[in-house]
Length: 229
Length: 227
Image 1 (cartoon, one colour):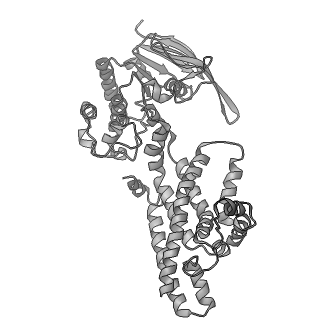
Image 2 (image 1 turned 90 degrees about the horizontal axis):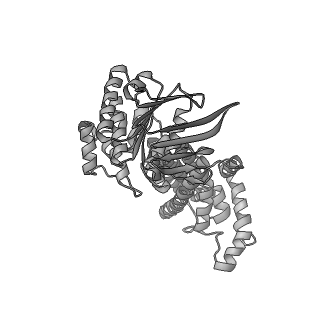
Image 3 (image 1 turned 45 degrees about the horizontal axis):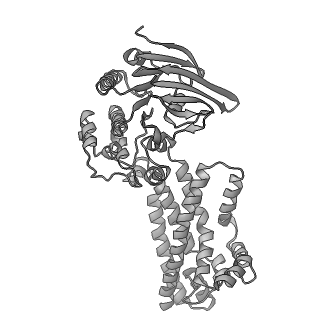
């Protein structure tokens, strides 16, 4: 039982950080891609969506190559700051962030594209700066879409297995998240622990899905509007 | 001269090219741009407001150059001090009527709160008889109430002139007539210069001191109906 709670706490910590990072980056990137037309926009969109379709182990491998002891970023971090990301919970955060990122930025981009441009123009004519237009009109109107993407990203980060295992390993109490703990328990023949872990995971994911469904835009016409208030 | 407008812009629309080349001057308090839809009226109005940039030209309002392509002058919409009523009113759907009306009074990064009280908001709410609906959201309003809210929102910002894009297009006939009279009365009382665009001849007759007729991106006649 002890293992399960430690793993659950770690999972929430890793998924929470990954989601917070994705919320900021995903909103920024989604906004940029929805508003600015530039050469190579489609290529960038495809590149950023790649983590959604690539096998997590492939992503994990890329991360090892980049962040590992001989990787460009890994070496630089080690030399200048003495930081090592491989086999740490911070490494797990990076893996989970990258895997879940497309869910946030895709949702944010679609939500921003759905905001009526005349509403932003109305705000400009009324004297608002571009920053104020963003925070007072664009973001509130796109918020529901962004939140539903963010909740899905949280769920995805919670369930991350492949990339996390390759980058952070399976150190109990340090990098052993729920999904990895399940795998370890089954491998070790600890059926009781596995049962309990699976139950905890299923219940948390169900709660997240219900939340995401409630926030999804356009679920029922008039009902969706109520989220603004 | 109140308005000196000379704007040019090429707009490509899937194969066909639309060339806007509009020039007029006006001293009228109530100027109407009249023409069929697709004539370039809205484009012109947006260029006057700073919501759209001409590729070439010059826009002067009351001796202030707000746009000049040769001198590279292009004041942002928020610096021009003009009010704009959009064809679909563009009310903020996430804010109540009162928050919409008070929108311009808060210039920071936060919208006016639900409880936001202000004397000019109260004044315009009363003038347009919106007290009963001030806590409602735009989607809960009738067409006439929406238009009044949009007018109040623009007037609270104390604009130097009011630009109106087809303000009566979405309304049935009786309502259109009533609101036309209201607008005329408002204009006279405030002595606020207005520019209105329409495709409806009745709007021209009821409202215009000067009418600029526009078709296919060109001015085809410029007349004072009272001459």
